[in-house]
Image 1 (cartoon, rainbow, N blue to C red):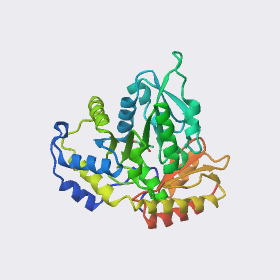
Image 2 (image 1 turned 135 degrees about the horizontal axis):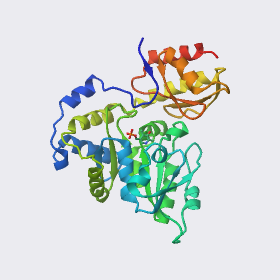
Image 3 (image 1 turned 120 degrees about the horizontal axis):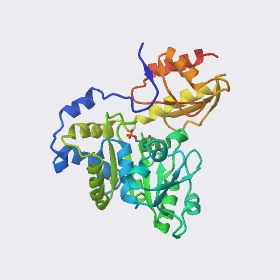
Image 4 (image 1 turned 45 degrees about the horizontal axis):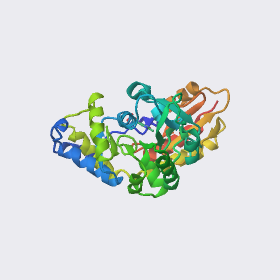
Length: 341
Ligand SMILES: *Cc1c(COP(=O)(O)O)cnc(C)c1O
């Protein structure tokens, strides 16, 4: 029986065509700026989002950390939601790499508004940290894959401009948001100073993220990437996987969303489930009835050959992805219904 892995959309493996594209890549030393495939990927992604430039990095943590570093000074404060990846899952990097503190908001499933920004910006006072950066996450992982529309983004961007704040997008799953709203990534460029996108989540590449921004930003970003150990050599082999992913794996994210909705509906009807967060994209977060522990439940899933992750004291997360096919969906629905407590 095949393992059904719903822990994350990072667990996918490259398919034959992607591997072939990697094998065929033209490469050079990217630290010397000589890898044509990396350049091609960086230009492609920047154009897609209407930004001037991009740099290829090994991880989304690195692209976010670089963005924060080039958009702040030590002692500054970053505004983000308390569920944000940059705050919870980047090993304290904000403090460690950029010497900044955070102002945590409590948005609607992770989404805050322009007014929230206005109400939380610090006064110009020597006692206070200086607010310099606002960061949003789209889609929002801990919000159960909730997303912002371009209008909501536009109004936060306007406020940031009025208040002289930098605006960053942690877009690890931005393509999931875009296929749901039907909006174009090109519209994003006018609103954000920096954008981080991920190739190794829903898009199915084995590795890689890009930081996008102005030419000026990218110059600074390259130096920070170097100090973080992210200068890579013949990395066009990996960039080729990214190009393939951008060309072939965006539209199909809809299928992941449809499967996630079916999982959500299945769970809603089960006696051991207390509640299911609305399923907007490819993430399903649900809580178990009182008295059932996450470890007990995960052990039951494990017996059915299904893997998931605990996501809070009594919550579980499923993430659908490229390697979770129709047969696995039917198998999972059947198994979820068989589990009893
Ligand atoms: C996965 C993820 C990242 C980056 O993670 P890496 O594992 O470092 O690539 C950043 N932000 C969000 C919202 C993510 O889900």
